Length: 144
Image (cartoon, rainbow, N blue to C red; front, side):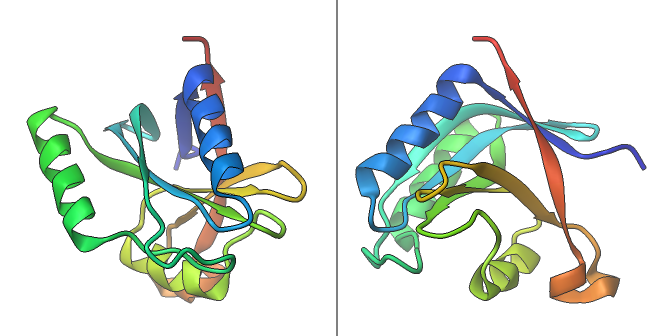
């Protein structure tokens, strides 16, 4: 199998940085809309969303807001190809993240607000379970 990747434009990466910085010390979140083309998740749009928990250790997206985004994606002929959120720790999935990654097996970009590092993970193998079934995938940044 070819390596899965997620492709973002420079401006989208900067937007994710801004979202995380504006929400700090709380976890931030955004949905990434686009298309999957073979092994590449191509991000076309970053949609910031409110963390309904306003928490430093978890995030949740309001169901009504989520529904509007899915309708917008359908109208724009895209789909949710990624989930972004920040952590006030190292950029690795928490146990809660792992549970939701199994339910939503798309790329999850996590930005550390303490190290400024960004990494991407995906749940890929149900046979290995929620811990071993998660793999880091490569993020490709392209010019605008």
